[in-house]
Image 1 (cartoon, rainbow, N blue to C red):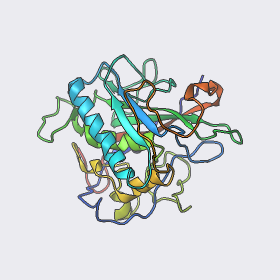
Image 2 (cartoon, rainbow, N blue to C red; image 1 turned 60 degrees about the horizontal axis):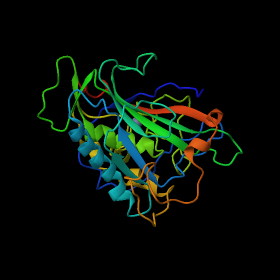
Image 3 (cartoon, rainbow, N blue to C red; image 1 turned 120 degrees about the vertical axis):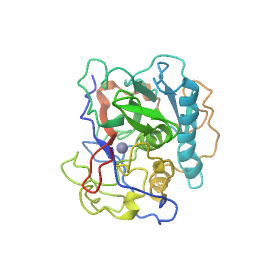
Image 4 (cartoon, rainbow, N blue to C red; image 1 turned 90 degrees about the vertical axis):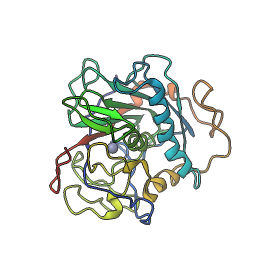
Length: 305
Ligand SMILES: [Zn+2]
């Protein structure tokens, strides 16, 4: 069985404002394999994310589908200018959960903030993404992403599409598009743009430099990224807008698409370089990593809730 790793906490803090479109790209950070340290990436060029049919207690399945489509389009629209991966969504058709099944999934946890039968997640986490990839150094396909599933904390948060929404009692407000845009960055293989101390050492950016400590002074260029692991306030929406670094992190890995994706086709698309099916990889090759959890967290400069 694949080994589930610890969940990485991702908290939203610090006001990001509207800097995303005005700050030049500096660096990005990609998730790397645990053993060989190579960046993880999809072989497929069209990744289709499906919503668990159980949906959210706050929003209808149609509303969730519309937000999912916008979050996917946030990425695909920008990355299509320079390369990239085509993200799309499918309507909910069945009950799905986090599993190494090759079906990228979004699951709202409506009753308990945990995977079935597993330990509870950190209650401050809004969402988290689990990426499953081949972790076999020296073998073809090492670092290939096989699946990526998103969990959303509908126990401690009220998901919304509008800042005017009143959160349910005992919960904080979380903008669904803001959250999903960040988590879809992890689905594509991006990591956080500052060091949140989940790893022992600071990860390196694309230029080989250690990324800044989230608890230290963080440059505005990092604060402005969608992959920055903190938010300014409940209901923050600024991460809907991608920074150039977020876009670069995808484009430098995935060359431009030359064919069209067809998400209506089971399995995703009718494009891509010849690549092995995800399901052909032995399970023993698969390692599960938890890329992120999106949370509200008290920070030194300001309490977010
Ligand atoms: Zn994250």
